[in-house]
Length: 229
Image (cartoon, rainbow, N blue to C red; front, side):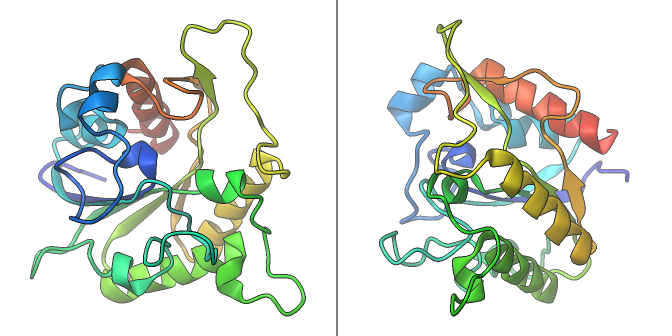
């Protein structure tokens, strides 16, 4: 795909937030203090900014909300869930529609131990794969011509701590279960699965989760490598 001058939109959680680049009212992780700690000076230092700028694309919308999940959780912030139409309908700008939509979600679902598939009387929106399907369906309804990248959460390190081990079972379920879920649902919905951990190093992070400037580059490199771009 020739991405030059194509419009890119982003769907994400805290890892993809940046002050001044997300909708008003959304929680932001990379505010001025964390932005400085991470060494992020501009939007082109983020993983999504690096990808867009390196491919010659244009940023259309960044719909990222710190702390958000794909799936519904009663105790989480109302309106923050990525399966909601209220979020997925905001990836365009008037008559301008995104050519590429990059989704980097799942970390908070994993950290919360969200069930992979609906169990018993559980609603689909309460499971990770069920909510991911709803999210992709809504994206396709609004932007049928967009190429959708379903990116897996990347393994990261804790900056400055050589012996630190990545918590693969942070929420009681292994991260690989969520990666496999993204791959499965992306295939069902004819979207592109992008393995952010394929042939790349762990991402340097401030706290073991949120990338610093170096980690952002590693993440961008891994995504582009997995896409063959």
